[in-house]
Image (cartoon, helix red, strand yellow):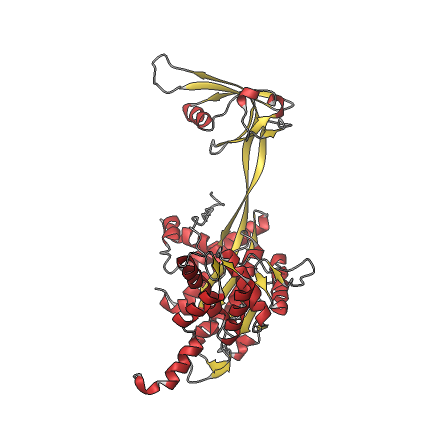
Length: 453
């Protein structure tokens, strides 16, 4: 769709992916009630009550959309649900709010400068809701007359379509293209349709209630609608949500739309972005568009270097900045790109001052058992209570991630033994086959002389 002079906008939708069960497939939201209190087990989330409530407060800020450039740091030990909370935020925001996700190390593997990669990530997390008015014809089909040519097999050239509302009736002349569209949509007398005047696209809304007794022309799935009221021609508002990054790419090159799908975006010139920002500001003043601030989630933020942190300080002050959520599992460590300068979480103190920090705590054995039960359900596995309790002990002794990873191999063993349900015997056998990190480290220490150092 053209969104004004000079700047091109296109509605872009992700291609449908074949879903596989990932580490966070079970998460469907933050599991909060209306008062932002975290339920014990809800929407795939378990425990971390304070962290989830804090994330809920951040979500409320995002939905209001009034404050730009706020940043949050999720800090906690490995395996305490930092990425899960970020995924819960993304699901709770819904499809209309942009959510961009990246790992800190990605910045260094892209074929562009670090600041350009961060700029693109920021602009992926800012949406523009563009409103367009289109003219449509909406009415109930009274009659379709198509002039069939004498030669058999030739396409019909002309026709007439009679449409009515409760107040008026009009006859429209049909060309070959419209006749083909009517045939394709299988439109017949008694159907209620809308026709987009600009594109000529026909949408069948359903059958008129006046024809509800025509049993021959209906099936089990037939939807009945009222005959439209008022004028046949109406103006309808259409809303598209695109990100600033998508507008940047489409306007930065002649084949911009194809580049967007290929992922080959390259560096985008600052002049292009300035022109787009000016145009978006103009649309906002005219009421044609509004900004939808989203979320940029940067995992493993300690992997960024001092240049990236300096850029982030400035980028967060922009009025077109999203809410930025960082996550790290580091304590006091060295800031990359400096001569041995250390800081909490590997983040410079001047950036830490701008952040609100949400702390995630280790899960209790009871919470681990509940998480394992949720994971078993998502993976379609049958596990008895005793086995879940055993896995909870494994999680406390080793790690929650290791306990979750034992589920699927144990299921494979159970099936080879002709059982659907996983038992403690299967888990013990799998525990002997696969070591956890702590057990492996202990073996290395005991047998240090047998390994190369």
